[in-house]
Picture 1: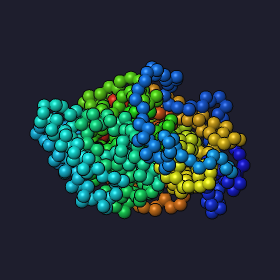
Picture 2 (picture 1 turned 120 degrees about the vertical axis):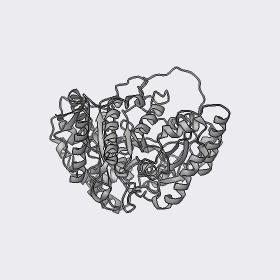
Picture 3 (picture 1 turned 90 degrees about the horizontal axis):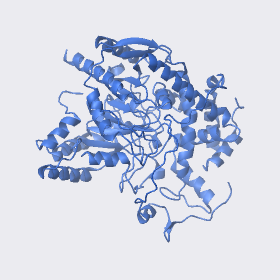
Picture 4 (picture 1 turned 180 degrees about the horizontal axis):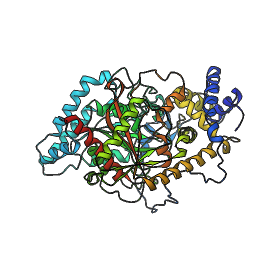
Length: 99
Length: 481
């Protein structure tokens, strides 16, 4: 089982999750996540080397549909729900920045 | 179910025959809502005018000689994580406050086509993450049996709506117990069908390999009718099972003689004595009705909670990445996109949602994936296989639904794991993809409702419903004795 989770781990995970967190939140989350991952010790003790992972319950594979044109969402209706739209597109601030 | 209450089928039969007006049905429920909703807060939104218009249209259809369908005039409340075109769908989150979806969930269209009338959108723990509705951004729902207590969660509003008589039936979603646990705490029937039984198209995703829609009702027969209507394949949901389901309304006509009811001898401890007592009474009732009780073991059951709290947050962290202030919902303006994403999500999500996004992101991140998420998926396989073995020996399994009756607001304090323990008995079923349902079975401490959980194997809803109906009949017999 990995080492105990640190505030630096939590700050990094928050960046990966695109979630701004305050220093107080980092402290609180560090202790809560550490506590929750501590419960994983019982699972960690199991020998799972021969077990096949189960990603979903019903064994459906390659669900395909006929390539037929059908109605899609109305563009105006969709854009009306956006925080900002312009010329038939979603409007966002400049792409990029730290993170 | 109280003797003066009508079943959904009775309402629909009357409306279809023209002997009962859908308009009267709606007014009766709106009157109950007007009286008790301020105290209960089951709804994020009551759709009174829309319901009245719909009732008038149904009555007009009947007068014109048309059949509105098997749920004609039946009032339904929808958990507010099911998309309703042009009608706000919030998931009880600030990040979606005011959002009006441009499409209907498949279940919404299906219910409408069957003649049902939507009376409102119900409160939930934000994005269905919680067991008490205390995580709603719009304030908690109160349990109709005791307003100082929680209704359970996350579908607490839908459970309370049926328990309080605000709607004949309601829909919830169940990822780890979010239909069954509130059903138990509010004294109503709640069903999580087999994964893929009901279309999830238009259900806002929490953990996609676990989420399933199901009904809350006052009776087992109503739950059967609801699933007969909303179950079935949907081309818009690639995980929906591509085969027709047998009628559950027919299934409950059969008794339980000859069925094998399993008692899990290695079930995790922790159920209160009053809850345990009702479970024993349920075994007795089924034995008296002709079933045999067999001991089975499900060793991996006990690892369900741990595996779930890695798998569900991992899937949630991925699903909730879409709330970034670009296409819908809240945006906090900032100088560039990354700053906007971080600020929007910090402002829009509540503490529990943030906690699960963080846990899930951690479990999936480089260096930890195999140690946490990968192992959890293997444990999931163990749980599934252990259940499958148990179902070789027993047709259904019986457990408590919730370890306790409804608890008081704030009872679980700041310890997230204390809240997660509410779902000890419900979670393993979601991991296996199997069906499960909670049936009201008398009362426990403080005279509060206790639910008994009936579990069955993949697509074994017919046998699960037969057992549920037998439990219900034994309660009715007790009440009239």
